[in-house]
Image 1: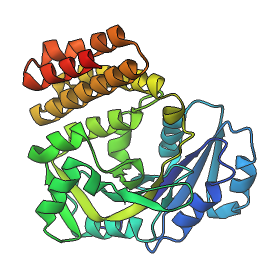
Image 2: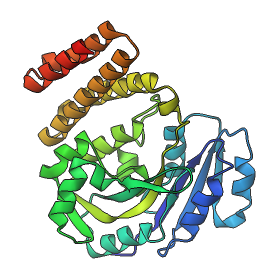
Image 3: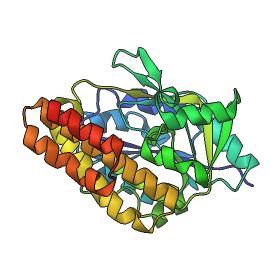
Image 4: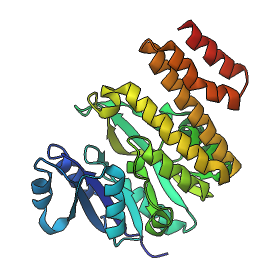
Length: 309
């Protein structure tokens, strides 16, 4: 197979303070990117000027503010590489992020997509934890790898990954043709749009390459929209997952079960957030659909926990 050409898409909105770090991390890759596409999503700060400073080393597109999904999709449509990789402007790649995936693709042309571990980091750069170690699906893959740097995840192992995935957008590598065929990231959602696309991708995948080494840094911001207004974020999360659950009815059984588990957890998180806000009745109402859909001891325990406050 010919060497894969990676188009790296960086959506940016009012990202003047961090965009250079993201771009520099792609320029420093040991496997050079075919192209870097920055999509300025209607920024009101100096984002465009920062991007322009890189001249012909990157491509810069500008659109009216339409959200991160629309920005990623615009970059993907404009891309000329055969593989897509994504990076949010406040995160960064480690030096071998593209190399790990590119060399595997050269060895094995039967991979549907690739993902990998990453580090959660604070704004000051200090590390909180790795992603794979923090999620049950990641722990299962690490155990399967038994110390190896890479491991293959198959269709019958997708349920826990869909329910609580360890690889995020910045460690995802997907063929551009597959991305476009799936319609890209859905628009109209404030949160969880990346999960929506990832699950659709899992539903048509049989062989997924997982790199068990951290490939990138994901920065946890205390002032992010989801953390500034966690209750609204939980409402938005459940709204997205309800729509995903409707789409999942035609998906393979393992993927569909994973979506249902994720939706149940989302409703429970919303219930706890409402209970914490003193809205006990609304909290109970939030989790009742899961009780009807999945009656059992676990659902009853969650219900009694909310009733006790």
